[in-house]
Amino acid sequence: MTQSATTTTAPATTTPATTTPATTTTPATTTPATTTTPATTTTTTATATATPTAHDSLMDNRFLHIKRGYSPSDIEHLKPKHQQTPANTQIALNFYQSLRKAFKERKSLISFGVLDPIQLVEASPYLDVIYVSGWQSSSTCSTNNLPGPDIADYPYTTVPNKVDQLFRAQQLHDVRLRIDNNQEDSPIYRPIIADADTGHGGNTSVMKMVKMFIEAGASGIHLEDQKHGAKKCGHMGGKVLVSVAEHVQRLKAARLQADLMNHPLVIVARTDAEAAKLLDNNKDERDQEFILGEARYGGNNLGEKTIPELAQWLEENTSLSVGKMKNLKDLKDFQVNCSGVALDMESLRTSEGYYKVKCGIEFSAMRSLVYSEYADIIWMETAKPVLQDAKVFAEIIHAKSPETMLAYNLSPSFNWDMAFESDQDIKDFMTDLSKYGYVWEFITLAGFHQNGLAVHKFAKNFKEDGMLAYVRDIQREERKAGISLLTHQKWSGSYVVDETVGLIAEDKSTNIMTDDNTEKDF
Image (cartoon, rainbow, N blue to C red):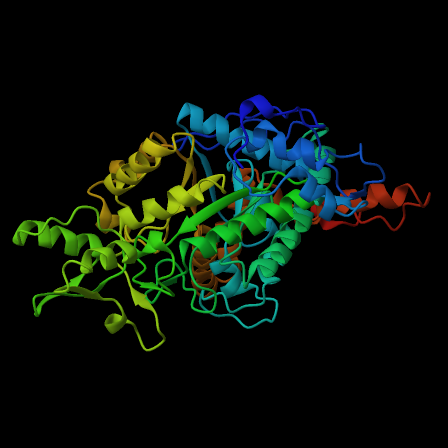
């Protein structure tokens, strides 16, 4: 049921202040998304008034544009009486408000995939969001220690574990920076949005995965409409879509789990229908319009067509009055009076049983409009970075769903030099996207590529110049940039440990940062 503004009630928590998102041409250096220091641990809710009730949460303006299909009483019935309050609830609320503000102002929140706490700490002053990539996790930190390509065959604990590591790093470095700078706030608590792939299974698997993400510290996730078990990176071949109905169930399952935890999780619905050429079944009437089949008329083979394409051919090349014909029911009704018309979808199925589809922006938009009722943001994965395609997609979506926020993957899989005529065009691309309602723009694998390039350069120079390479290319550059990594003992939280232990032991002779610590030389 879509919540209307007239039925909303104020949530138990105070509406957080939003932050001005970074423009796509200047990194954000403003006050971070959280204006107060978030809790560093989870706390047990002992009474019904300690957190918003399910009724308050579902009716809040935060969910004005969200359809659910269940009631607040359903949530109260299923929700544990006592449960932990996620430590990042306020961060997630702030995140959503920042997204809405960016949408209204036609700006965007910027992000890229970080690999580890080092990248998180150094990137946070300049980013609005921290992204955790399934691709990067698959290649670098699978929980079974078996690296591989992004086909979601790693344990589904992999990405939640990475989120957990990064959120714990945020907690530590927030304390460290507040101690170092003698300030109440730090720029570390950026919202974390993570790759949930297909949900790694059925509806209950989606729910369990979402629970892990929320408990780990994620403020948002994205779910894609590929088939679990056949999932591929969005820029690989061989992608197989599930039906619209199945992906809607995934989105509803994710929202249900968040509601059960009183958490305002930001959910991004991704479609791969712009480039995916296969579909796992033909049962959903909304998909049937885009399924290809061998078309025939009067014994003549017309080639591969969709039902609407067959209807158009008949209108243009025969005297038949076709009218509306979009799905299998329409086709069967038409065949009652015209038995010479046929479209055989079954003959084009693959050996695995998948149907061939006509992929593209139109297919993506149809799916995304359905998903927009259940998700906060829509993401169409694209084969190339084409501004006109992004504009057309946005116009189709906003013509029917004007409040729908959009996301764009600035993928390193694209050959950006080939796709654009000039550096200025590349520089302007993100700003141009934001004009069409793309509020979250992110480079999925920037951490991976930056890490590899930096190590490659240093290893090569180290072999040639020995220790000079480290001093010249790293230590001096760290000093010049004024980054805290230069004094890595301090960076790792040594002062935090010393202050903590000092509350227990009066003797400070075993403190880390004593006179014999060599970092005093810096």
